[in-house]
Length: 178
Image: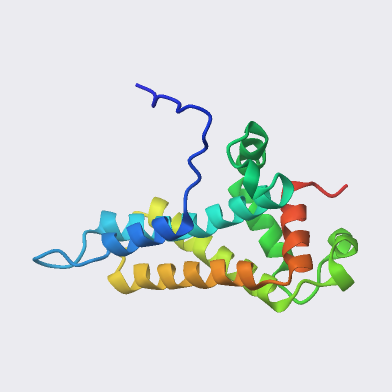
């Protein structure tokens, strides 16, 4: 049975709530360490906290936070794909914006916060893919704690980026350069 659609109010995922959920999942039960499924879900939730922070930042920039209940906001929010985000982060984590992207970035480079954010997000996405799809790894609580820390750091870096750098990143994420 499909979930019933609510009225017209979007239920945007709060990144902090995802991180709180991740922290709950890694708390040790009365006996023994957390289960592997809980550690894996915690790492996944940490990645998704950062991912949804990006989606919210992009949609807020182009549609406006005051329009979060509109279908236009939903279109922008849902337009980002994980692969596109990974590819863009991979292109800009270095010191300068590469090739065709350079002309769309202030002074042809992203600030340190944005570049650090992209590296952290790539790391988180790799951890999430392993946690979700690699049956041969055995995770420890420290692995999940690290993912939560990285996610908090990534979200902070995105927020602390210079507005022109953050906006260039979000623009390049949403719009294809031709």
